[in-house]
Length: 129
Image (cartoon, rainbow, N blue to C red; front, side, top):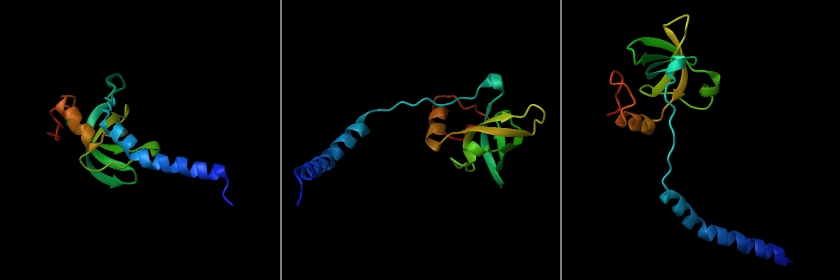
C-alpha cells in the first residue's frame, strides 16, 4: 500500500523535474563575470607559452622575456588540470637557476583570448589574436 507521504514526494519530484528546464534557462541568461589571475610582478611571476611537453611533469616554456625555461608542474596542479602545447601559463623563475621555473597558473583558451583582447598579454608571446 502506498502511503500519502510517498505520493506527495513523488508529485513534488515530478514538479521539480517539470520546471527544471525553466530554472536552467534562467541561469544561462544571467551574465557571469570572473576575475582572472595575473602575474604577481613582486614575486617575479611572468607570462609564458607552453612550448613542448617533456613528460614527468616537466615542460619547456617560452617566457615573455624571450628565454626558454624548463618548467615544473607542481603536484597540486598536475592532478587537477592538463597543460597542452600553446597554453598560456604564469611561471615563476627560480632565484638560483634562471633556466628553470615553476608553473603557477594555466589559462584556458577562452581566458587567453580574453586577456589578449584586453592587452594584458605581452606582444612578444601573444599568439591569441
